[in-house]
Length: 370
Image 1 (cartoon, rainbow, N blue to C red):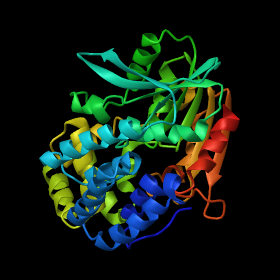
Image 2 (spheres, helix red, strand yellow):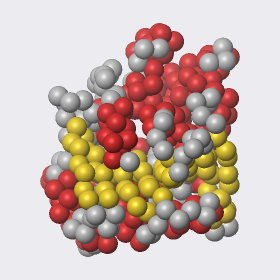
Image 3 (cartoon, rainbow, N blue to C red):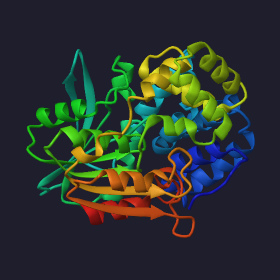
């Protein structure tokens, strides 16, 4: 279940995301949280608290928990801080030491002048293939752990980091809107004729974009719905501020937009993270440049091009994606072979972004759809 630990909406989401769906009944994690939670005051204390417990769990060879804590520690560290790279490597190192959930094969898929890292989870006797990817900040390894919720389906599962994600980003591949390109590269590499796709968070948009142009895709899962990149910034921003920003963006007033964002970021840890992480992903150097980049990440005009079976998942209290986008997406998918929709509420559970705290509910719907 989704739990509120501190008086910070995003802190709560990340704690639920990293821990609750896997460790709610784990005595080790619950004991650790008693020491971690009181220390979480700002980005610096967040880093220090999670790191201390990551080191402790690694020393005890509890690699699964150590990996989770290293990822949490890395979350708010800025790209210019050398500790970010250290935390990322410790996260991956401990993850693979502790990952025993599936038999798997690792690949490096050639892409431009670099590669896309991928892991294939082998399901004996499976006849179909599911491609799975994340969105704005999750790593392939975090998604791999989630695949426990899909255990037993008639699919081999290929999880990969695309441009702007994980090791692909570390190797210089920046965030792009035209996700059909990396999806096609993966399909070609494995010589597949037909695949289904599952995109998590911002990946909900990526999955839709890929399906619009890559017709080897037969089923599309938006986990959760994600219409456009600017929505993630608009959410939790006062209407008057957003209206002003929209006018300045339309006028290409870079200086005033940058000034506004730098002022807001100084006192808003969530907004500071969104912008800083976005610039790391895309290579943009200013908030204005980032917003212009985000404008390219939109479903506008894509809906009629999607003719596959579609599953739309939505959380009523999602803090990144407005639930009001759902009717618009349904209407724009005018040529879809079928549309299946599931809205999660506080009463059903799963009302948060990507059903954090109730992840199994979302994956139950996916299994039925697939």
